Image (cartoon, rainbow, N blue to C red; front, side):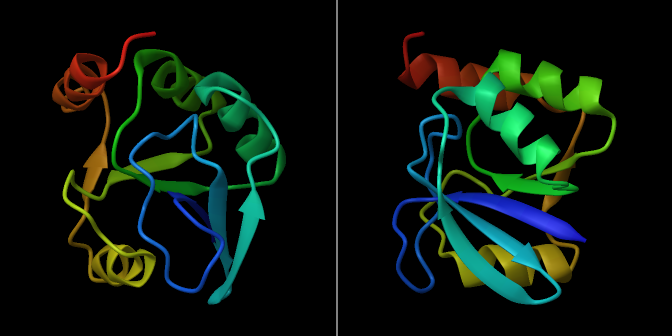
Length: 123
């Protein structure tokens, strides 16, 4: 399973980046190995296209807008898990995911996350 997580820095165990599409870095986790890669694109839609092309199957995130969410649904191959809004480090988010303690996101529970995101950021 290949997991992507937007993070704030390219250092070991960075905090998650709240802004999904504008995150400067993404942690890519595969077979227990973590690599941190620079975000090569701008904006949520382009990030989804990039992550899908990289074979990402799971995204852990804090905030997301409507457009990237709809693109994720269109891929049909990426599962979304909300890491919460509080500051959280990558290792903690991964531990919660592995322990099945993160909420999986779908049409029934995405609206409050998008509303939270849009209240903070103008597009």
